[in-house]
Every structure is written in C-alpha cells, then in structure tokens.
Image (tube, rainbow, N blue to C red; front, side):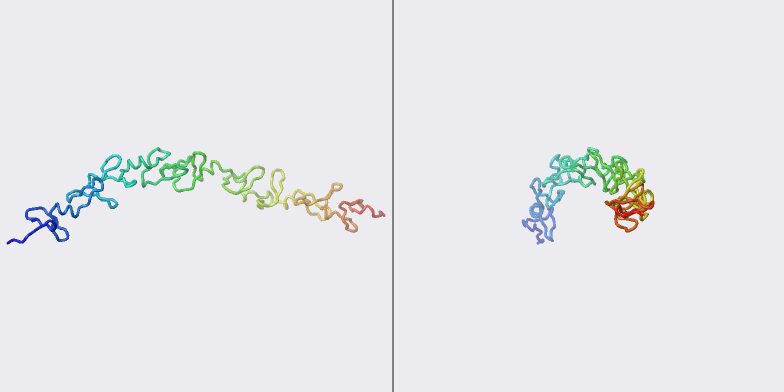
Length: 279
C-alpha cells in the first residue's frame, strides 16, 4: 500500500494536484491561499499565491489595486507618496499639495532643493540676485521691495560710500557734514589720528584734532604762550589784540587775577590793578 500524501490542512490527497510546501508541510492551493495569503487593502480580497503582491507600510495590495487615489494610475512601477493614507502619484500630489516656484511658475517637486521666504517658494536655482542674476542658494541676501540681492551687489548698488576712500560703508562709520566716512578714514587732516569718538574742530571744511588745530591756527596766550582754543568750556580774555587764558590773566606785579576787575596797562605790556599807584 503506497504512503499517503495529503494536504496538511484539509487532508485531501495531493497526488496529481498542485501543492505548495510551507514549513515542511504540503498544502493544496486553496488551503495555502486561505491560510497564508494576505488580504488586499484596496479590494479586501485574498492575494493569491500566483498574484504579484505589493507591500507598503504594513498594507498589502494586488498589483492592479495599487493605484493613484486621484487619477487611478498604476503605481506599481511609479514614484508615489501617501497623504492621509491615500496613495497618490507624484503628479497628483504635486498638483494638490505642492507649491509653485514664484519665478518659473512650475511645481516644486517633493524632495527637490527649494527656498522659502516670506510665504513664497523658489526652486533653489530660480532664487537669484536681481543684479548679477547668480543663484543665491544658501548665502546671505538682502530683500528690497520685491527684489532680492546678494550682499555684494546690494552694497555696491545701495550702500553709502566713504567720502575719503570711496569704498562701500556697510556698517558703523561716522557722519561729518552730512557725508559718510569709515571710522578709520575720518582722521585729523594734520596728524592723521582717528577722530571718531573724539573732540575735534574744522577749518576750511577739513577736520582737525584739538591739539593740531591749536598748534596750527589758535592764538597764543600772552602769559603761557600755549594755544587758546576755547574748547571744552574754556574761557579767555581779549585786550588790545592780545589774548590770555582766563587763569593766566593776572597782575604782572602781584599775580592777582584781573578777571572781572579793573586794571591798567603798565610799562607797555604789563598789567596792574587799577587801584595801584603809578610811579
């Protein structure tokens, strides 16, 4: 008597029939499909052993059921994405959910490099400087109304230029006579010391530090021969085309201060109080 060769599930003989071996046990085709086949997530029917099965995120599909939710296009060999568990081909997804590039008016495809700014979207290669027309990419840029500039072009086009060196003044600097200067360019006309943050004065529209101005242009005190600048609240006395620092305006004989007091010129250049007797 020949050995029996039966389906491990329904026990029917498999002699002369197709069967599938699984875990060392034979199964007839109907039993194998009912026991081991997955259910199609779309049509809810079993995916038979001889059908092409597609698998996506714990969901199984017949090949003919794996289609775009919008246009019914087969996704078996096409790129696709999922939106709220609905499968969509790239075209439908882009038309419905992707933004358009404001420069070329074409869809910005998922996964492509893009730039978003102020609620608008550009392809990376479409976001260019309005002046040099080179892609800005990830570099810094400066918006001006509806236009965008790379930093170099913006500074060249709009930034003020230093009155002395004529180069762009991007930040900081000083203003003198309503003109912009780099701090390092705004110097004393004589000694070239930087004047930013320092007291200074001018002559013939040229700036000078107080020391140079005093040495070059200020009158000299009759007593100490140092320049009389009048800066910093300093007061001075003027008499007969001669000038004195206020502390230097004293009696030639007793050195008492003559500021606010009566006095007489004595012996040409000397000064004495009015109450003193003249010889």
